[in-house]
Length: 289
Image 1 (tube, helix red, strand yellow):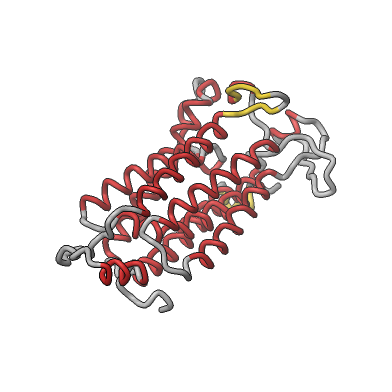
Image 2 (cartoon, one colour):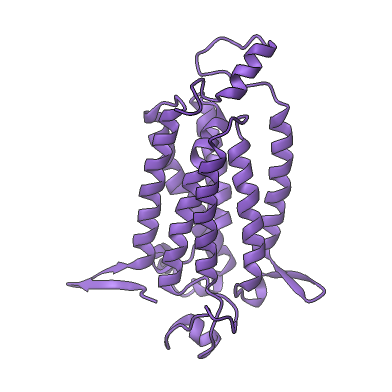
């Protein structure tokens, strides 16, 4: 655990903020490259990247503050210290996806083709961000006797909640899930698919992994929604369940939707050859390029 990497003349470099910045920078570069390969305009994708960056931070921080308002009631300025941790993934997810769709529609780009270009970046960014969570000591797990269980140092919040107990490294589970999904998405993207398939497949798989991993993670009592037998379900698992259902619905809907046309291109004739050509290459290019 290294929440502060170093101090220099009163300035501090926080591991969480650094990993978050790296995650966004690497993710944006990958997104721009994949968008270029799909024939999407780089200038509009660059603007979209900045919009997603701002909305994901605002949404993630906003939902965290709303669900932990008692921690900020006496220190309102603490709301802005995001480098100390305190972002809820699904808050950023929902606001960024909503704002991104609105922008993409406004500039006339194919929404789900853009989503397919972004999906691996989302997985990689979340994986890197979770390493920052581990170094910061937030988002820790429940007590565990597994050989890989970790102990956080005295003075950390996790040590206050579970004094001297080994815990599930839930942050690293989530980081590994993000890295694994990143590699899987790159492999899946080698085959032709309809627009939106890769994006919603990622959302479904990520939500499913998050649902399972959350059983190993610590949440305060106010975050739990109910129990089924010995299993207690928290608010993030409810969000995960909703996302899985929405993803399955969207995959089914988009599979039977007519193919999107390129911006500025004439409407497709709807003939079988045209549909086949679109299925071979969503961006109108050789999918192996």
